[in-house]
Length: 359
Image (tube, rainbow, N blue to C red):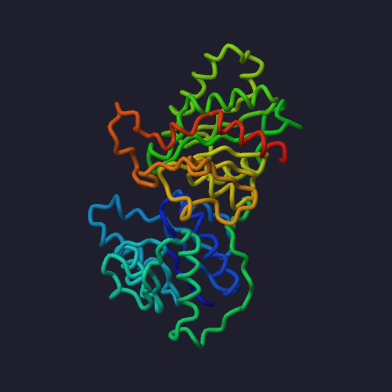
């Protein structure tokens, strides 16, 4: 049996965007066994996959990181093929320490001497296509010309297997249309739409008889609490309407997040990992973009996903996309975080109305 080692990206969104490339590997090598190494968050996406062992890379917390990485590599059976979807030197070291025969990764951080296949990282390309390009070009390289491949067409989209988990919603959510709200973004505050803006949109949805589920990781609890504070201050929302909100912030694992997403009719989200999960699950989505590059990280070939940014309204700012974790402009200036602040709730509600009428 062929063993294949893959260093999965640590960020949740990047890990989901890697699933097109992973699906190519699964299809080309249906009898292979896979070892996926990554952060606890990223490998949780694949914990229920058959013929896959997931391993958390804890070397960053170790006193001697490279030594810890060496032991991690040696703990995995020597692999025939290895791919790193990270761009750092350490991920290439992992493949090298494992003794992987064929090691593929982009030629970044002067790590080419550790790899056997190291093309330049493509520019101006969607991240999902970067990963798939690395895999496809590696598999058709001269070094692997005699490798038996299953030539199966893999459609260019994101792939996630549904976990074997059922979740129950409150009884009054039954037979209702449910909208998920993901107001966080782990990468940084620059990607986040304002809490008061989310509250205004949620208020509109509640008055249209939609049920609402708030999502977020534990350190995003305050974001959702702030949204709820704004909602409770709205005079047009009574307790009955506010009772149609389920706050799951800090209460989901990756597995249960996916299971809850499968209950949604629609998701409103920042550019984030959950946005890509929704894309993979083909959930209708409205994604709010500001400082990030829509060409590289937008929902990938997701026919039910819609992007909304100032660029959508031909109001793109000169600083977009800055790709910064926090807005670098002065906080007391009118231009501070304008890429998201100028994307007003009324603009989003208007777009929502046209989308929801078709859902």
